[in-house]
Image (tube, rainbow, N blue to C red):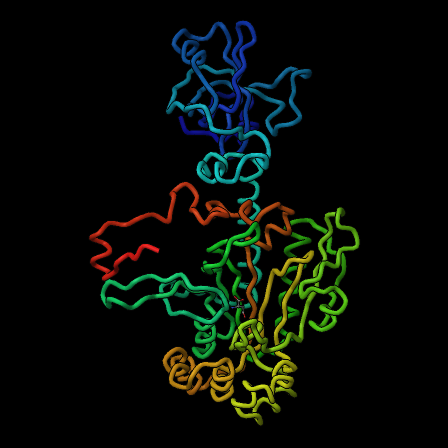
Length: 474
Ligand code: ASP
């Protein structure tokens, strides 16, 4: 007999079906044994009556929570007063006829029938495959797929092409520390895991793709916190022949539909309020202001922040790009930038001008969390080169590190711009979850240890020798 999913059993009243799943709960009431059986689609009450054949009854008596079983039996309506409104199949139950144990289970290290917030993160991640049995976690994964499907269809419907870019690549200046992968064939050289597909998506614009998106995995070796992961998923978008307004209106339409149609949530203000970076810092002392009028109301307050400064000076005196070096300067500031020498730009004489330059950068904040950031890009090779030099790269180093993209810009580059969202963080905010880890199946712990697998771990001497690597004890 073919397997029936629990959610379908409602359609089989009066029929015999075969179900498979986990024993969620076990209760014996005098001569009757009841179990709640769980599969991916729901929960079904199964009753073992005393007149059942002996082997089946003996097996039923041995059952324990989380054993995996296969049961054949008759689906019938429950008596009115025994209905259970808390489960989808609460109006029916199965009267078991035969049972087979597919695998036994030890007692779980923690309960899975509650929300699980009280359990230590370390323990939940060590046994993540059990933690994911929890209804809340399963629903988060379902929500994740719903959001991804919606975004795919939305962008696909507008002519965007989903394109994957490499994981083994070259360091790109996104502002965090790189994860490096040693090369075996070219000993002493390293790949860097992408902090974002920034340069590849710009190269796709040179390639004439015009509208690109993907859900890339990106890697940043930063100190971990509740809202940060070593590796996270982005929704990454790039478009050609666009101005800032084109990007903002596309994203705003997508975010409104995602929030209202997919998640049935209320947005505090539409169109999304827009404020400049300067206003945000003055009024809210934050570049991702929380504009919620009522923080308990479950309402979502989006807000665009624009006109960021292009450059900042770090504590050690070095000049950095606020977003990244590929970001374009505001038109008026570009003129001034072009007139100044790199020496003046980097020196004390030009500091005031340098810090006053604004960029065509925009961020989307949601309830005080930065969920997206992007910019219109510099597509003039000479300007890009000067930005790198302003950031302190020697001309030869610019050639070595970024020669490929500047060369590409010599072959007909369209003006372009884009944006990227932190997909996990976006979900965390929409689902009102306590941590970004609640939206990811197997996240790294705050300590940096991988879920279940206990990575990072030592590797064999042989592997190190092949890579030409010697470990120096610190
Ligand atoms: N690559 C940028 C980031 O990851 C986003 C963008 O500029 O499109 O923040």
